[in-house]
Length: 405
Ligand code: ADP
Image (cartoon, rainbow, N blue to C red; front, side, top):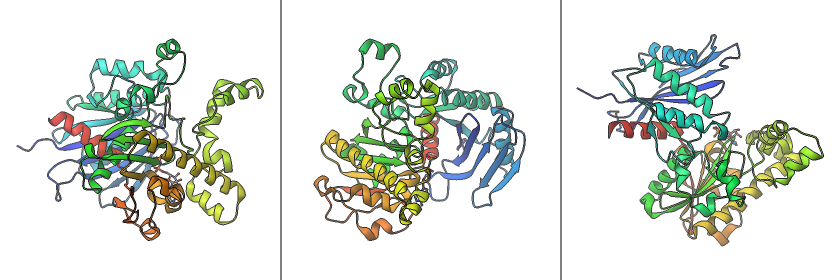
């Protein structure tokens, strides 16, 4: 008998569910294969929609009412069944759920039971937008398919190795402890996957290399990974800290918040919305998409130029800081939407940083490609790489390993 070898990966947001079905073993080339992927949108908002793409097939879209997460998962299951891939026993080994906040408790993926659900619930105050949606996804998937193990894979888990001096804020220790205020970091599955792939690209074991990973998507974060363990990351208590992002400010003086409250009369939720939704590239120049920012820079638009320069300045500051944290850097890896596609961002981020052993080869940097690749010249002390991330594959791999070993 062949064992169940598929994993359904679910990324449940408050109004959307992204899903992928992967085959983990027995594929033609031996590597896990994506069988289908899709997105259910506008949950509970009316005018729902599911878009689904089977492997090697055409994307199809239909409209339907999606009042809640249960309806969203049923819609996903129907799409998969229509391709002859019903996501249930006997083929399904596990459902892997992306869970944003695992606090200090979850250092690895876990099979979900009642106690795990309660713990994720207790972490809701730290991730009020994300954890409730992740929980809804887990509870629903469990009810729909009670015989299949549900595995929670946490965005914070890879960062739980960060040493105390990097994880602690210099706050009143009792207040910090009472409210669990510390650096947790996010995008952990991506940082884990990319740092490991980068080591492989160098032909080395993860334990032998120090890597700075720059995950530059709509959200953006940097991490310093020493010998396979994360030792520092730029996002903190929430995904607001650190790099300049599409709509998030990243680092600011915390006193900006007091000024906005006292002088501008803004309420906490208004400041929250300003810093999370109307800052970053969007705040500086009105566009959050780096493609649009670059297009405007080419047209001589001064606001777009400033936005680009602020974005790059912050990146370079972090490169310097993380070089100091690591002591020796073997590679800098660019990943996610901007990191994988924007050669100009990569070039500007390392320009003139010979002092850190960093340089990119113009031809390699501009050559198109979807595979992990090195873009630094041979002579450079530190490798600069483009390593496409794949969070769903990493979640599936971790979930499958947990239920089969
Ligand atoms: P998310 O954080 O939503 O997962 P992604 O990692 O997919 O985001 O990154 C999305 C962002 O990537 C877009 O907002 C856009 O700014 C950027 N991006 C995508 N393609 C390009 C490109 N060719 N050049 C520059 N930026 C790009």
